Image (cartoon, rainbow, N blue to C red; front, side, top):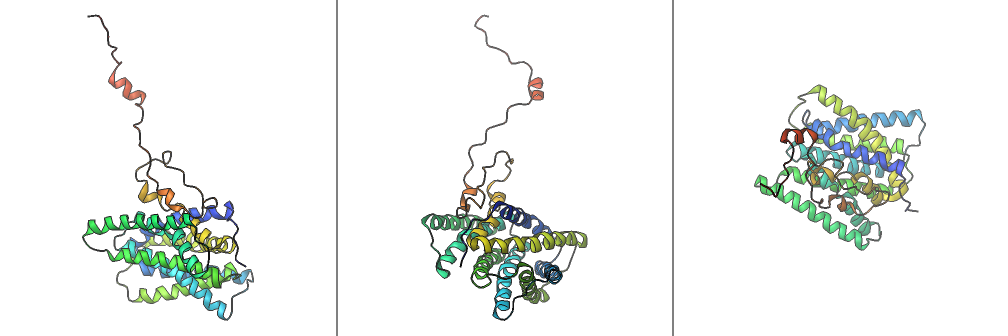
Length: 311
């Protein structure tokens, strides 16, 4: 039976932090290595770590059709998502724009769940889908106008979004009950093989080995191993729609709040309270008032002269 419980805070918070860190580290990664090579190596190393954990802990491995379903879910969730996003960033899509596009995941997942899983699409979610699409269209339209043509990286980023959303639903539909440790190994391994085929025909080479190694360590241990484990558990607890809201909770901030201090940013409702309205994180901020003058500025200006009626 499909779970409809809310995702608890101890499970949601790590997802938000880990997924938010993936955009700047991914941008650093594609600056040091080709995007598909980076993705395939990341996923292959993650598969080895998951497999070692599964073997040492004697986890139950999926078999038969469930093994195939688990592999397909991994190709969609990890392979398509990371290959699309890293490929887009490698050809010029800013990390902030990638973050905004991926923030569409909750509403797109809710729409796909209504069509393929029969879940109810509420009016508020339908409004969120429309607003989210408009936000992405406006942002990508600005990129097209600035470049004078459609950047192929935008198409790769949209492919990453579609793979992420479809993979979460596929996981919910066909992979319920699969052990996170063994399932993570199968999913990461299948995704690594799929992206590795593309990487064979990719041009370019590693330009900064130190930077690429440091990025890979974080992406493998935090992004792939910890992030995948938390995300699969979140799908098992609250379903794909709620889990996708967790991974997107912090994504709208880079493009929507540039240059603002953290104290002046509008608080984004956490995903365990607000699973279906990610567009509110991009609400237009209020006017920014100038800061009061510091004591040093007051001293430099001298004492303020008071007006007098006498001459």
